[in-house]
Every structure is written in C-alpha cells, then in structure tokens.
Length: 359
Image (cartoon, rainbow, N blue to C red; front, side, top):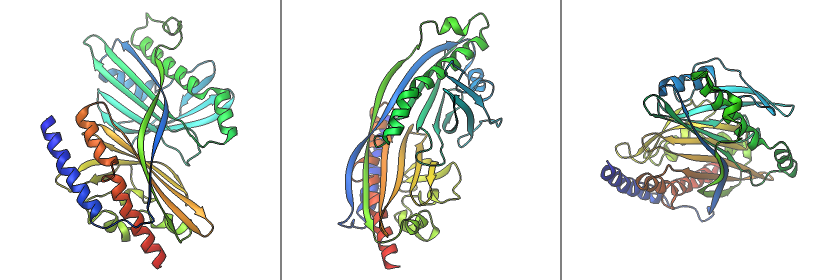
C-alpha cells in the first residue's frame, strides 16, 4: 500500500508540474508563505459501549457539547447526521451572550472517526474550529479521543481580542467538551457521576498547532463585485481546471452543493476529494475545506478580494492539514509546494486578470 501511494505521489507530482507550467504565470503574481495557528485541546476517555453506540449518541441524543456553569448548549437541529455534508446546529449562551454554532461533517469513517468544522455566514461571524472524534473498539469499552482546534485570528480588532480574552472562549468550549464526554460516560454507565469524573478539572491537554500555507495574489483592474462574480462561473470552469486536469471551480459557485466533488490531477491519477464551503461574504471572502478521505488530510482554501479604489487584489490561500505519517505528508506536500496548488492558482489569477481587464 505504501509503495502504491509513493508511485501515485510521483505521478501526481509530475502531473501537477506539467499542469502548472502549461501557462506561464504573469509577473504580477505575488507569492508568500504563511502559518495558520490554532489553539488545541485533546482529551481521551473510555465508555462502556460499542463504537456504533457511542457514535449514535453523539450524533443524536447527546451532541458534541455539555452544559457548564459558564455556558449552556442546546442542540437546535433534529435532523440525523448520516453522511458528509450533514450538519448540527447549537444555540448557546456564553456568560450571558447568545450565539449559534453550526458544525458540518466533512469526514466520516463510520464507527471509527468523524471530523466537523464550523460553518459561518461571514468571515468574522464566530470562530473557525475543527472538532475530531476518534473511536477505538477495546472490546467491552470504546476509547473516545477528541481533538478540538480553534483558529487564532492574527489581525483581529482590539475589541475582538479583548472580548475573546475576557470570556475565555477556548476554556469555555473545552469545559463543554469535557462535560459532554462525562455525560456520555454516565449515559452508558449510570454508576458514574459527572461531578466525580470532572472533580480534578480538565482531563486533557492544551497546546498549539501550526500549519504551513502558501498565498498567491494579483492586482486586477476591476471592481470586487466583478471579480467575485467570475468565481465558479461555467465560462471559466474549463480554463480554471487546467484543461480539466483539475476540477474544483464549480465548487465556488453560489449554488454549489455540499459536499461538492473535486479532483487535483488527471482523472486516472489525481486526488479525489470533496469541497465544503464554510463561509461566504459577498464580494469579499470565500472559505472552503477540501477533504481527501482516502489519504485523510484536508486543505483550507480561502479566497480574499481586497478593494483598492475601483480596482481589486485577488488573493488565494491554501494551507494543508495533514495527518501523521510520512506517505500522507508526502502527498500533502505536493499540494503546497511551488508546483502544487500555488502553481495551479497562479494560472487562475492570470486568467482572471486577463478576462476581467479585457472586458
């Protein structure tokens, strides 16, 4: 299997290099590297139930969070979460402030692993978070591992930073995660008590996670509304798919389904994945997670349209979040090096500039 992944990686790398060099990038395309920083929390418990029972509990009865002294979570959606693209919505009151959190399922290996990300109406509308739930069958019990990662916004306003610090949002969420896990343990073993399970406080560990990304951008002599209108239109789909070697442009359209199928590389060798739009702000911003389930990694793709008078700057970010493992990290690396997604995005920027400035 590892040999197969290695050979596929070599062939895919060649395909991406050829596709990226098919059209020379415009000199005005700028490139830079950046790092996404997340505050993380990881914890692990055991429950007297099978993985299927634990999964059913979290997706229906119990949900992902429990109530604490500082926050109350109420599951608002009653739909069943059965496949990627399904979501759960919570109403919450944190220190007296009401809010809503919506989580969309982006990776689903039934009875083994589930990944959720927050879905927002706009860039600044709440935190960007990743919630991973891993289940391991131990026979009479199931080991439940939870990973929570919350994006650290680097260019927040002073008010937003002070507010987040004042309410300790990360601490409140982790308390809610622990209370939710403890409630699940009691659900499956009534001899336990939530208070006793949490008597010593948080059972997990806090930390920080950093992911590398690449940014490409270009100035365009067109208004932001015209730039955004170009994204995902059928007229540019073929050009932006590099003669259909890469398929993802339709997933940026306003009416794109979730999940929306994508492919990076030729049909026979390319990486097959799904795109989930997690935020969209008209004429300004688009955020999507590209998930590659076979290789178990994802790419956070962000589109920024920055106004400059009547002109614009189109910015495309791509940060890869690989899972541990040399082979997987190697495949993920093909997407973020200079001949991977940044190379493909170079062509998108050049094409968008040519189309808009000729009109």
